Each structure stands twice: as structure tokens, then as C-alpha cells.
Length: 487
Image (cartoon, rainbow, N blue to C red; front, side, top):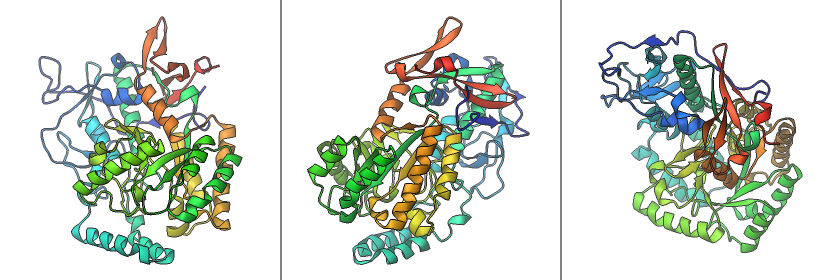
């Protein structure tokens, strides 16, 4: 039985992606100049038997980084042993898929796979070009200094001006980018061909054989939004949704303990949203560390294991100071956000010991007030791509921006659409802490031989389902057999 919206997830190698025999091989059988690196990145993603994966990443000696293609549909950023790389994704790009080689059933990559994946997920591909210039930092500081004295109309115009050139961004791909998924699938397919394998068993991405996962979050920005939370919980429950509420601990509004208790008692979740939502959390390291101590304190006080930064500002190299199990500050693609970029994936991933749950759909504020839309068509197009990739559907809908009948009606249309999808398919509806618990458990599972078949071992494996990545006519298809599904 295939997974996904209908027949499953298929990935094919682009024309011209040929596997060639390696040359310049040393007496030990390893290509000269290639450092053998374990395929832990592939194992981490698929939780498949390590002896079925034999991928060798190169460790380039050059520090020169740039953009390249890996197949016609995937733009990557990193270092390569041989190719001259481009400084911008808009320039003509070298396709390194043609430089992949095979030696003794090993797949030899011309780049470091883990480095390339990290560059995508952690937005290192920006390479300084989108880093905050002195002028940008000054304008940002001025904006947040004057923001309390402005109204929503003024703020909306400022944000539209900031995003005025968003359509010129070719990378990450709008309205959703799945480059990380594409790269992993292409490498896996190449490795299977190199080993002569038709299928590889792995631990399915979601518990109980769910095709995808859905999580709803509500970031509360104002007193009016806070006061609307009980009514919003009623709306969510009417459509079978339990959401996580992002609470700002300081300055924005009082945080009644009764409200938090009500959220938890009704099956909703509380996460800490920034400290005071002033947009300055990551401006300066020492000030961030001071704020992080307070944020951690509020996390313990609220009983929250998750965090999100205001305005989706992020600096992952500082995340170690935050004492939370998971974060939700990385957008998949963000040409319209104050901090542009995007993690190019629709799946959770670890940053150190913190699990990142990326925001994979456009925020309601952006939809309503920057794009001036009052329909769910953009959301629906993003949902379709995430479901095809069996990924995480993650939404931010602010109580503050669905107070009015017109925007609330749009949100209800979204909920009705999601409810219909959940009734037709096996989408797992979960609050973020449940996703965190599953992803951590799955990370410790493994697939072992069981006679002529395979089985999953590890704590929590009773909810895990065995799946296969199959090579079907040159395409990868993820498949779950009916007997593997929990009864």
C-alpha cells in the first residue's frame, strides 16, 4: 500500500544524471583525495540498516563555497572538489550529479553531503549576502523603537516596502521548498542503484503509519489576542484540532495562570514566544544570553518544552543557551518575512539536541496584510506539496489577526479543508510536544533482520511502522505494506 495523497511519493533522477565509474583509485580502493565519511546523515533521516547504505562524501580541501545544482530541480550550496561554483543562485549553475561516481558499489559524492544539508537547513547558503548590514540594523532598530507609536496600517506599509522585491527571489523556491527532501531522495536512489538494490527498509516518518503530520500554532501578540484565545480554542475543537499557543512572557500583556491552566486542561499546549516581542532578541550576544536565562525561567514556570522567537528571527548558533526540547522559529521559505531565507525542508530536524519543527506554510499575517489575500488558495498549494513529500504541515495563525469576521471566516475555511483531508487520509494531528516525543523516539530506533524480513527495534517501536524505499522504473516510491500497519 503506497503512502501519500494518492499513489505515494515518487522521485526520479533527472535526465543526464549518470553514475560513472570512479577513476584515480588508490590501492586501498578509495578514490584519491576522498575522505571516507559515514552516511550518518542518511541513517539519521531514514533509520535504515547501515550495511545497506554505502555512500562516501568528499571532504573538499578548498574553502571556496558556492551554489550548484544536484539534478536539474535542486539548488544546493557548499564546497566541491572540482567544480567552479556560483556566488548567487540566479547565475548559471554547475550540475554536480554528473560527477557522482561508483566504485565497488560505493557511491562517491563530489561534496560533503552533511555539509550541504546543514547549509540548507541552517540557511548558511546566504553566505553573508542577506546578513544584516549596518544600514539594515539601523533601520530595524529604528523601526522597533518607533513601533509602539505606530498603528497597524503604518506597520503594514513598512512591511510591504521591506518585501517589495520578494518575487525576484529564485531560491529558496516559493511557495514551498523541498530541496532537502529532493537531495536525500536522489542520493538514496543513486546508492540503491550502485548496490543493485530494488528496495531498502526504513522506519516510517510518522507513528502508526500516518501519511503526514499536522500541527497548528497560535502566537499571541496583544491583549486582544490573549482575550480571544478561549473562543479560538472553541473554533479549533469544532474542527478536531488541538493547537499550541505561543505566549509572550513580558510587557505585551498579563499572563493569567488560569488561562494557561485552561489551555492545558483542554488538551492544548503552551510554548514560550520570545521574551517581550521587541524584535531585538538576537541583536547582541550578551543581551541574548541575559534574555535566554529569563526565557528559560518562564519555560519552567509555564511548563513549556517548546520555544518560538518573535517574528521568526533566528540565529541557530546561539540556540544552545535555550533550555527547550524543540524550537519552531525556522520558516521553510520566507521571501516576505523581515528575516528572509528558509530551511528548505518540510521535515523536522535536529539542531544540536534541539528539535526544529519548521513552519511550512505562510503566516496568516503575511497572507492577510502583506499579500492582501482573503482566500486559502496559497495555503492549499503549500499543503499539496507537503503532503506529496509526507511532511509536516505547520501553521501560524495569530488570535490577533482572526478577530474580525472576514479573517476568521478564512481561518474556518482552512480548518474545514484540513478536516476534510484528515478524514480522507491518515494525517496525524498532533501538538508540537507530541511530534518532539515521537521524533526523539524514532531517532533511537533501528531496523534489524528478522529471518527473511525486517523488524523495528527500540523504545516506542510499537507505534513505528516498517516502510520501504523502492526503485520503481527509476523512481523512488515510499511504500508501507498492509501487514506492517498497527492493528
